Amino acid sequence: DQQVKQNSPSLSVQEGRISILNCDYTNSMFDYFLWYKKYPAEGPTFLISISSIKDKNEDGRFTVFLNKSAKHLSLHIVPSQPGDSAVYFCAALGNAGGTSYGKLTFGQGTILTVHP
Amino acid sequence: DAGVTQSPTHLIKTRGQQVTLRCSPKSGHDTVSWYQQALGQGPQFIFQYYEEEERQRGNFPDRFSGHQFPNYSSELNVNALLLGDSALYLCASSFGGQAVITEAFFGQGTRLTVV
Image (cartoon, rainbow over all chains, first blue to last red; front, top):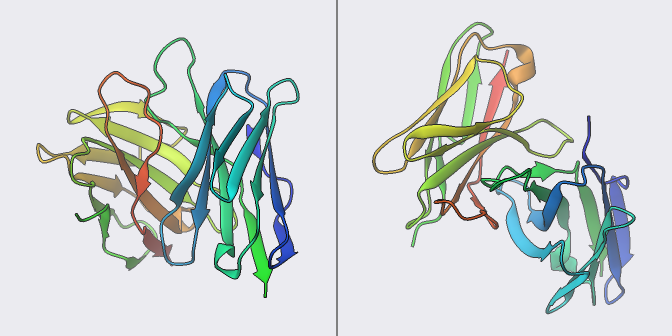
């Protein structure tokens, strides 16, 4: 049962343009969402997060949007740079009646390639 | 300030054998979580240790066990290895307590190959 889904295995974008990575979830108990970036031979690195009480969070070139009614979130990278080329994972935290203790549920990942 | 460190980085084992992976959390962190990432998939939560006890567990068989030491470092043990256990094993550290844990810091992982 895949509770967090990233339906696009890969995305190719030209340098300077916008990259939009999408993520859908099914569990309505998720109340905090995170995006991680992963380079080969490295562990995932935290990028940006959003609480379910918000619909947008910005950090520099990165913006995450959350649509709770659609159970959908997206990560926008503007402008995209070749160094952004990596695998991007969305992840969710649940709060099923108590603290979630940090059990992250990940999507399958999207490989982003930014061409110079 | 050292981040999360894992050892070894690569490991090859034979089916049926047992393996122990190690993790040292980031300085100041007291909680360690373990994840398994199969090829082409996202990381899957195995379990989490806090105050030397398993606090939460994912959908993994009892062949997967762990331990946390007083210095907060942790071990992941897998018994009776199967070919399907071949994966990247990631350790993540965070600061626990009773608060909701948000951003976790990951190590570079241990690549386990079972032949």
